[in-house]
Length: 285
Ligand code: HH2
Image (tube, rainbow, N blue to C red; front, side):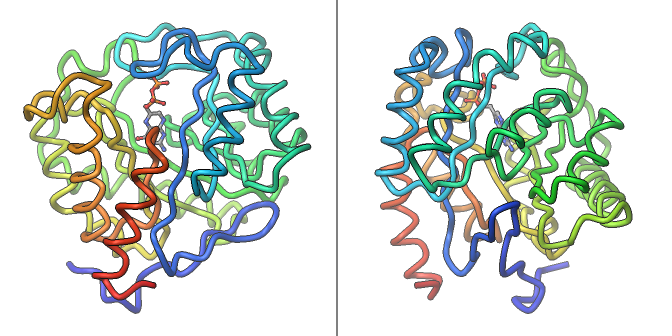
């Protein structure tokens, strides 16, 4: 099934407004963690993270994805109190000094609730709403959501990822979760879906998902894709984590050509520049 352009999501609604999807939007990554795979420790001090957040906004990010727990393969879980302690000062400062929408990258309803109170307008849940307390919170607080697909848990997800048909399984999972969210009272335009590149997936699984992303875009929700600096790029010969800009932009370009609306990236300036060109070719200026 291809996404008729009529099915393409046109907006992504969040707590404070909406992002128009008339052109590709860039979600800038801000990890306040000691152990993230590509930038762990770089923005662990609140003042460094705040400065980085403002820099991402200046570089043209449409939103900032703030996270206090690494979900890279083999990462150890972080207790909710610690996760909140990491992100709180950064979120409060960004909310005070900038209008940029902030999504909170968390699997924990406790962290999400505090973050929403402090100004986050979207919850990015890499576990795809696994905790049953997450959905009621999202409904009550009128935020947007990213529902991401992950097979297993970060600690072990890359040990033996296994699918009969990865594209179908990811789509079926996300479609069911989106339906559940809408059934619980979320507006359909507030729901974005993400195939979870690298989250319990082999190299071939990642390539299949990117190749067939139109399967997801055809569901009519905003589609978010994160490829930046990920290890599958390295496996294809795109270099070490700090050297994967070209590979990441190539993958993002293909994702957008196949229907992605939002690209999650660490390299905002270059991604924004690249997406301007992609959008022009796709007549989305
Ligand atoms: N990827 C990462 C984290 N969160 N969220 C969404 N929606 N989609 C993604 O692809 C995604 C995500 C992993 O990247 P990063 O934040 O740099 O690493 P870490 O989890 O080690 O902090």
